[in-house]
Image (cartoon, rainbow, N blue to C red):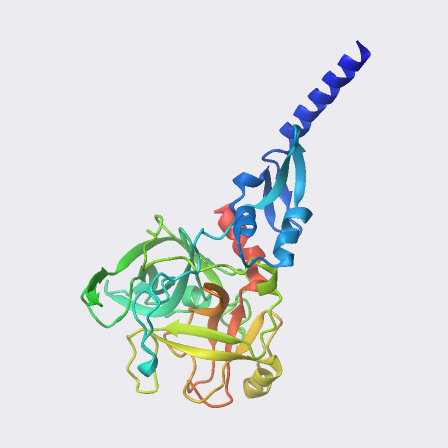
Length: 353
């Protein structure tokens, strides 16, 4: 009788334990907001388990984030699963062809890259900044593209499937495929609360836009990956290779067509020297990128993503912030906001809104 009672107590305790842990809020080992769920219900963990290229750091996520178990033979482990996860298939472009002559780019090569459309006081639309799709309804850009634009302009929408911003036609044909612009109105705007347009250092130059409806994922529109992977977060920026894409000004002064450029990461001291006359000194949450003659992001590229490619997966490591007045000047790198340093803020905004 006593042993039966003990078993019943243990069983009841186990049920109470599960009830108190399953779906409870939790904090992951990397201080991210999470929820205690079965491993099979955590896409983040499943991606690690299924990956052929997982690192030891990624594998340790499973061990370091257990938050309980459901009693049984065998018991089923519960894991603290991040609330905000990258969209499955993020950062993998379906279109691989690239036109390197003149650095022009085919539609779909960077399917997360888009432009912000503003409406002026006359009701006309203008394109001023770049952006990047990071989730079904969330777009990453620079804070100055939200609160630093001329007063006559208001953020209206974002456009994807864009190739030539100067063309009025909504559709174009490339490689015998007819592709039309995808336009999504903006519901809410979130410039970083610490960003100030009067601060010459341009710190916290990062912002989020929330669309009114889900962005339709296609071969030509795909979110890019946020750098939740520890190996990406710990990347040494100096001398690493990055890619920037945008529709801004070029050395031939012919903006409008999407182009891309490969840039190298630099030591922040180089940017400190370059921008010293403007009394600008980079902070830990800013990146110094580029500085080769004729290769740079430029006016019109602001807010666009600094991309890092690991295998076939592309991560957003930075947001175009500011640079030299003459784009592509030798030994004059550009400054980018480090996305890694704002992941917690990005997650908080997405969770709370």
